[in-house]
Image 1: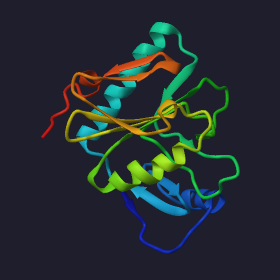
Image 2: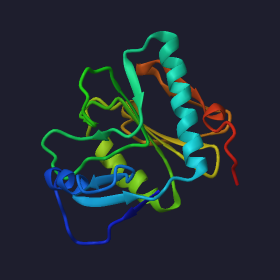
Image 3: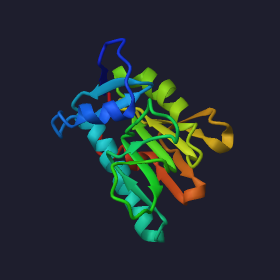
Length: 189
């Protein structure tokens, strides 16, 4: 769901945030490998999947009084890396008292694929997320079919594909998500 700003121009986090001060609040931008990326308006399917995912995570969290939060729209960074601030569609992070709009401490990151984000989500973002020490899982959800690709630290971030009837298991966080519920009421095809 993102469109790259086609340019050879490379920037860092400081310049990225200076640029963002002049942008409308409704625009969603990321900095990936020094490249400014603006996201297109999400589709209804994308929003339904993200909303269902958030609902399922919140239900689990409240049932077990988890020590993590599920949030949308928060950036992720790596210490010492000034060329990346990536914003997953949804992330799980430890409870914290700060009010910043980014974190170093992501436990799990989720992206909903779009036709123009395939390479970015499956390669560039995966490479970034696997460098986050606290991250246990990176999950990519298809938008046009019931399918999830899981990259787990415990499996050296090798891809594992799940289909209808399967569950996303993130055991270190006590999370078990049925794909059928993530895709509830999502028109596919």
